[in-house]
Image 1 (cartoon, rainbow, N blue to C red):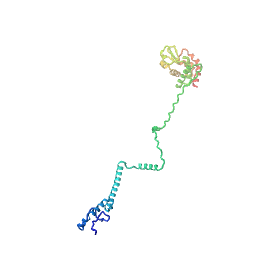
Image 2 (image 1 turned 90 degrees about the vertical axis):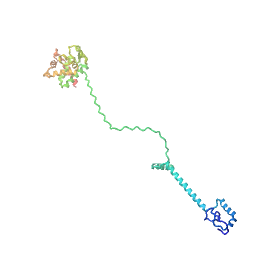
Image 3 (image 1 turned 135 degrees about the horizontal axis):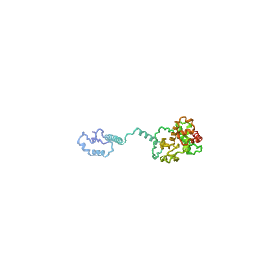
Image 4 (image 1 turned 120 degrees about the vertical axis):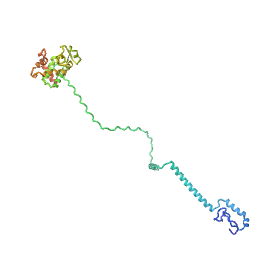
Length: 294
């Protein structure tokens, strides 16, 4: 309490700072002093309340502390909120994404960006076949040599020359010497004139390849051999190869045939009604055989 007898106003500039607001003093001088200054005390209180900007040390500290706490709360809330949203919607970037972002950042700072041009998708190339070991080409089969066509000699035509060649080839297969080949060709010249004859008496003989038809009993083929005499079947005797082998087989069975005259050797096999007729064909037969064997 001051000496002037007035109450200390804690809201005035001279008020004490160790009292809280609206706390009345418990020490009073007497009732008369308090009664004589009611208006001043009321005005002083109203003045302090009417001016909210009046400095109040106690409230100033409280306001500053409250403001700081509020700001800290807002900052914390904003940080928590941002962290919560970010963590729930965007996962942590991987190392590959970090590297890609770094490359994009560098490009955005000044590096030349390459324009991305959409390309039309193309069909994927067909995988090539797996390489395999190349096969060696098989050697081509050599064509069979064509039969040499021998020009007819000694006044023969081509059919006659071909039949003479068939006689010589059959004799060669049997290993018959040249003399026996000449005897066989000369005999065929006399018997059939080197044509393969069928028989009018044996209609069956006409079912096989032939070049002429004769009527001498059942005689057929190049050597006019008769099936009824045991030379063979009609089918066999119409084959020049078979007919020649049948004649030469009989010739080789004649003792000393090599030293006989051609006509005698031929007659020993054929038993013809004209035994001397074979001799006239010896020179022509020799010329034909020589042309075939050449």
